[in-house]
Image (cartoon, rainbow, N blue to C red):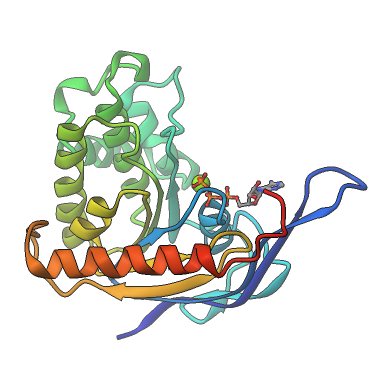
Amino acid sequence: MKVKIEASGVGKRFRRRLGAEEVEAMAGLELNVYQGELLCLLGPNGCGKTTLLNLLAGFDTPTAGSISLDGCPVRMPGPEAVMIQQEYGLFPWRTVRGNVELGLELARVPAARRRRLALELIALVGLNEAVDRYPRELSGGMQQRVALARALAVEPQVLFMDEPFGALDAMTRHKMQAELIRLWREKEMTIIFVTHDFNEALLLADRVAVMTPRPGRIKEIITINQPRPRNLLSPEAAQAREAIHRALVEGIMTSNPKEPA
Ligand SMILES: Nc1ncnc2c1ncn2[C@@H]1O[C@H](COP(=O)(O)OP(=O)(O)OP(=O)(O)O)[C@@H](O)[C@H]1O
Ligand SMILES: [Mg+2]
């Protein structure tokens, strides 16, 4: 298996304001992400999951260690790796089509081709009827689909998703999870997906990386060997759930309690 992203000895310190004490968000983090895998990232609030995505995507730089994509150091965000945030990040003054075309505009794709590609993607995520609607006219699930279509428009090799389905109701969430698996297979992307939901991780992931509390590092990686669609009531799922739970608890018990949050 080819390593797509390699994080080695990664540390990150933040200074909240000038003169204030530094916060150590991450220390000695080691992680290899394989090409084409769907890796779920799970860990307690404030352990550094969003920070890690930002570092891997090149939005921020580590204060220690190194991060590479396809063997090259990551220095800035590029079209090969795209992030989807929890609040969708849509532009309210642009229609669905306008939002999906955004990345293509930045890449200077000619208008006719841009339009055709955008319509294809909108169909792919099932939003045909909403092409000319504005984000405020869409439900959370539909906005999430727009964000997905917009991310896919630039044909990224890597997709970072930060609790993307956290705000959706159970049924919509279930639909989006199935949709994501379908798109992931079709586009052969590498996906790093942050979630707090054990079931979501068990449904989606090839591997689940469990982080320790701050300063975050990878405590354990649990491989999910079940074929998809997954049965969450199977003995295999119960075993994986147990392993994730154990890694989380162990991480919390052995973390350094003297650092304030
Ligand atoms: N820009 C910043 N400036 C200062 N501190 C920051 C900054 N970004 C993150 N931190 C701190 O780094 C730590 C990790 O934050 P991060 O947002 O990565 O956690 P998280 O795992 O994504 O949490 P959650 O599950 O709540 O989303 C926290 O203590 C946070 O306060
Ligand atoms: Mg976060």
